[in-house]
Length: 112
Image (tube, rainbow, N blue to C red; front, side, top):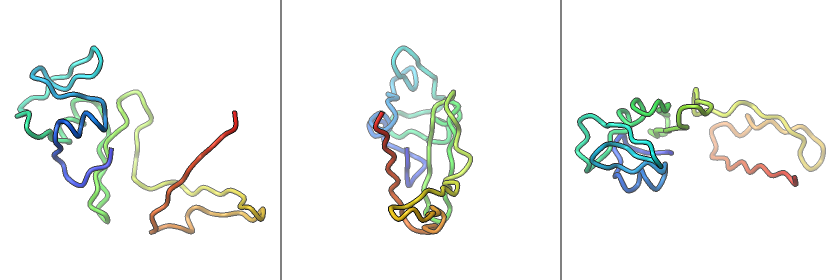
């Protein structure tokens, strides 16, 4: 989940992560994790990330926060994508890093 602030409305958090904020804490399926000091009006992403073992990374240049994935997944170590080199339509090697500093939408597809 990407956010511009460290607090989020509980309904937005549930829509983006699947975690609902209830009186007993953050709940998803049959799991609930207590959120100490939570008022229920806004969720502190730092506390949420810490309690659920999720990484929370800040991108200073764009003032964005990135939350996720949940524990057990591969944790993000930065908001930078490693250089990816693939052939283009003319069989020339294209370096993803040549687009550094630009917004990029990367779509992956496989026929199988």
